[in-house]
Image (cartoon, rainbow, N blue to C red; front, side):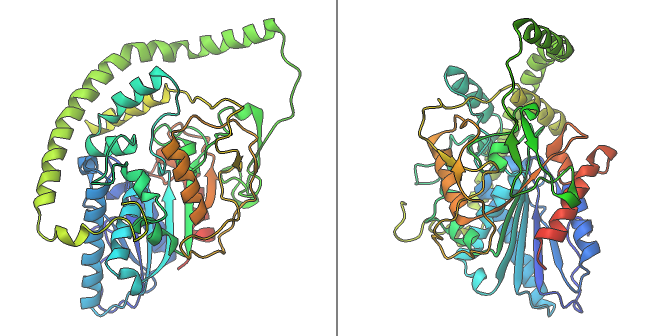
Length: 452
């Protein structure tokens, strides 16, 4: 078995720590090969066991967060049993999720917690890279919001409905992402038990999972980089931002003359004209191809979900979601989806809106109560009035932000500048020169955030 899938089970190994890596939409274990390799180079087999989940490879990620989480949980339990049979004694658990894999991982830890595993294992590191914690609904107001989000949400089967929060999860009458972020859910209870909760979010050029959702933030200070000053960590400059003072607005400048503005906008239009022309030609073709492929994949996904529901041993994963007291041609197609999604800009709430008035530039939580006994040593930023306009998110998304921030996260913001596909570059999804900045991200994670 490849190293990128799972390290071999060795009876002589004494490692008591298991680290699980979970890939994203349309992904496979090879996407996480660089992460797995760097982990192994730093921590030999007598220090760390590595599992790269493979049960959701390829189009199986269409099958939804719930089904994907159950599959990953089965993989983890199977490996833990194998290690125990071989004489290893695993006492610590870390889970790393990339993109959709972060949401699948959040579901899986809820199942593990409900089955009593966290009484045997110490939850240590929970890390997400470019994970859309708030879904991928584009922050838009008006009819175009409904048209775009309604169309895009129906092209990825169960996963698409869940990522655009138009699903109803079991009997909760709520989207699964809302349930995952409910303080009374088994999923948030499990998340709170991890010693380190860390996320990495691209500030620009992530057309699959934009900044606001991967950073769990109600503002996006990085829409216009010319209007802000960015500060970096000295040892990881210019890739990792300073978590204490990541960004600040530039001082107000005298307004440009009408002719200057006209000249600038004309130059920008001429620069983008070839792109617009190509999009006009390609988007209809890509949309048709995408829709046909999505229909086929959705049909296959529904069949797989039915078979999964009928599978033996599933009852062990269908546990109560809420604790007492709570309310009950893929590469081309993915490229087309990213291009269509990137044509949708952000809308903002009116400045007079009172929603989410207290935020921080990097979306970190204020010092607040700890609802489920989570460790308090996580570094947080003092809340202050927003310097940037609030995005037109849904009420459910604002609630997710509050709940997820209350549990506490260390948020690391990433500036990928040498490649336009920062979603892939952030974890070095493949070996190519343009992804070298992702190696800085992984080095930061291993040196500054990951506890063995």
